[in-house]
Amino acid sequence: MDFDDTPDEAAYRAAVRTLLEEHAAELLHVAPGGEAVDARTHEAGLRRTQRVLAEAGLVGITWPREHGGQGGTLVQQAIVTQELARAGVPTLINHIGLGMCGPTVIAHGSDDQKRRYLARLLRADDVWCQLFSEPASGSDLAALRTTAVRDGDEWVVNGQKVWTTLAHVADLGILLTRTDPDRPKHAGLTMFVVDMHAPGVTVRPLRQMVGSAGFNEVFFDEVRIPDEERLGEPGEGWRVAITTLMNERVTIGGAGSDLGVPVERLAALARERLPHLDAERQVLARQAVGRAVVASLAARYTGYRRFTVLSQGGLPGPEASAGKLAGTAAAKLVADAGVRLLGDDAVYAATADGDATWQRSQGYLPGLAIAGGTDQVLRNILGERVLGLPPEPRSDKDAPFAGGRR
Ligand SMILES: Cc1cc2nc3c(=O)[nH]c(=O)nc-3n(C[C@H](O)[C@H](O)[C@H](O)COP(=O)(O)OP(=O)(O)OC[C@H]3O[C@@H](n4cnc5c(N)ncnc54)[C@H](O)[C@@H]3O)c2cc1C
Image 1 (spheres, rainbow, N blue to C red):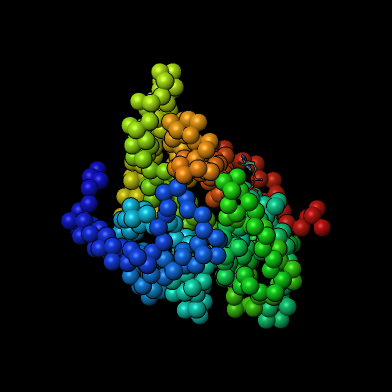
Image 2 (cartoon, rainbow, N blue to C red):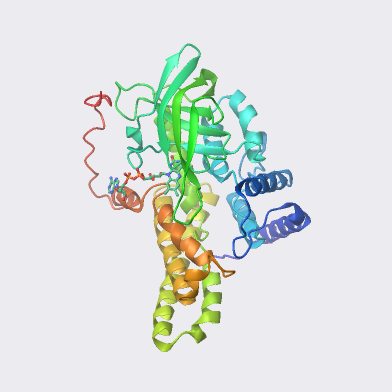
């Protein structure tokens, strides 16, 4: 396998680099130590950055042209992602919209919904969130209890979602609800697009151990959604949700890029710090760096193989689950090794001028091992679909959802 750019890819990369240089002054850049600005200013900067990039043709690379995308390839998307990271541009604010909600609207939305939503999503005029998980249904998503009851041309929604990334800044969300409790749990669900500013929607941020509040509790109290905002047919919500979830695994684990700090940064840190450690710590740090580099490169190159399959028109399968599992484990090893190299300095880095990247990554990665499918659930998928092990018992699969719950 040849990892170098083809002449076409090299030309595309050069064009992307030129565009990023031309627009550098308008884009937000990640400050090395994590600069403290107020949340509203940061959000405005992120929205502006995505709009500038969208106008330059650098957002929605693989989306069809008819929906405002660039009609490009996955390789081109990977090149743009790499060049944005190289230029120090932070993750796009609408990453959930771009990776999950938009593709779901493209696959299941009406022409009217596509016209109203997709171009605005690409420019971050509307920021989107994904309202699936609930306090009693995460891994077992189909057991969710938020209800939508039809009332004429509207649906009335009551219930609670949790861990909703970006809900505190979102304008719109895709919302999975139960519309028929008398059918089996997967069959009684319906998906909607919900206006996050509608009366009855309450968002409460949840602070994470890294210090910021990136996800939220969201409460729905008699929220009215017009029927024209339904995504797919009533009772077809699970099928629609599967589109979102497949895109989520590919977005998180399928592209073969490092999930945490790139391992090259660890190597650079090791060259700088190892000579200053005493003999005993040096041995331990070397071992940690070695393990992290091996795991990281194995995950990255395996990712490239998946990526090749996708770029040749193959479909994402359980490989995306393996990618997320291995990528998260490798990223944890990289972060741990970085903290080990910094030693006591790591403790102070967040408060002084030091580089807080390493312990931020260490604090954030346990969440990534849960989001989009926990490690255990991904192992179940691999056990059943790749190794052919007997499936888990699913005694409630065909029973009416409401049985015993009312
Ligand atoms: C950073 C972050 C961002 C998130 N963003 C969003 C978002 O934007 N939108 C959204 O809807 N949700 C989001 N989530 C929620 C996420 O999808 C759920 O947390 C996840 O699916 C796990 O569900 P749970 O938290 O209810 O844990 P549970 O499902 O209750 O799991 C608890 C424990 O039991 C284990 N377990 C559960 N079932 C099995 C099984 N069958 N076999 C073996 N072990 C099992 C799990 O692995 C875990 O260790 C986010 C979560 C995180 C951490």
